[in-house]
Image (cartoon, rainbow over all chains, first blue to last red; front, side, top):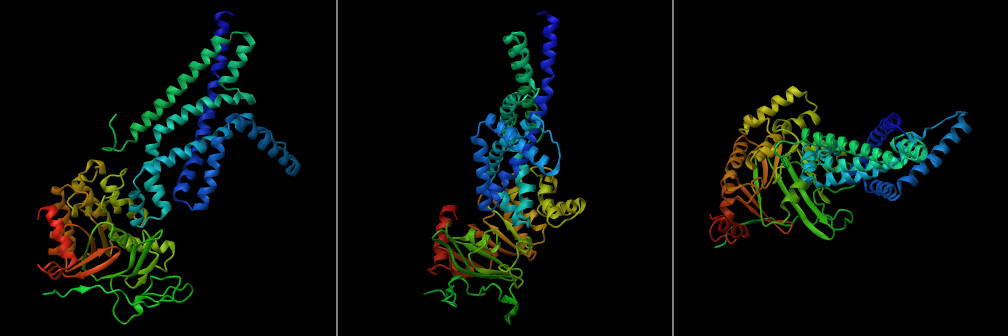
Length: 232
Length: 292
């Protein structure tokens, strides 16, 4: 294998970065949209809703991501496709990419909910009390007072979730999504040069982790409340 | 020689057979029945009236049918040992922590019968000052005062800011408007929290040990603001251990212990030497600790 072929292969793998990035951005956002309401309702919602939500968290934190991926794709997705065909005559083709995104997002929602729950619980109870004392409804107090502070506290733990999710996203190759891992495996198998390509893939993951964590650090600095907590 | 103490007598056991609300003495609570309001009684309603407030936690009774009234311009002072239910009483009156029995009337209107939305309206009529300030940490002093005007009263940003500045000016903190709570001293934080409560134009202010979390040299500035408010005619119910300050300001002390108001009366009556009152005993112990 000469240098040009290596470069071509590397370029091919590099193109997977787009899929991986889209996958984790999508899954993080979905997880955020699921996790934040879960955390708020677990703490401020009625008891029975909190119970149901803790079942959600228990389920999605308890199931291996790969099992979840197969359940979503071969279970839910094919069921939806069959129902669409049978009842509406629609020929749906749901992509493996979106299945990976949904599976990662559902699981990340469970993890993120506990990040936010911890952050909300770490706030003094007086913040919510003071807001309701001024006439805020419970919902206003949560949105205007609790969440803006809880999100700031969540950022360090959130960068953990980002790093973990980034590497979890590698399982998406099992369904044939053309992200970094799938392309690396293909190239390695095709050329029998395993080590260089897996090292290259590792470096890509390192870089993505570093970039994301750096971005979140910057966000943490920008949103820091003057005078509060540690200077850095 | 025994001082004539106006012992707070236990409210008459009005409805001994009422299984649902053992604590209710003023207003029988019967869902569906027309509410009996204090306004229906011949006497003009008190500005604020708490009737037979009862609160339990588990099998522990925190408040035993506590009743008190506030008229316009009153400043009443609640004192007593910690754990006696003073803070719980304030939170029950504010319906932040709704009482299990009894009712609160503001201008003759019963809080017990209010919908959840109306309770929010009721709460904004009553200002609450907390021992540990509870300023919103993520907002500047100005926004702390303005946020409820904007979100609760729906004011425009400009109006809310103008009012916030006026209130901060009243407590002497206009120059600190752009600082965050973490950049303020304890006394300044408490003054911002007073400004925040005042901006809502409350009819009554409840102050829960407003100076207890402050360094001794910062207490004066907060007490000054409270004194100005009192002189301006604000109706207040204050929990405090600053007996020296309180006895000069208030006409009525309420001594609270084990979930009951056990003594009430003017400072002169209760604190006179040899009055033998529990209040006098407690206050002399306090001044031993505080060094006069």
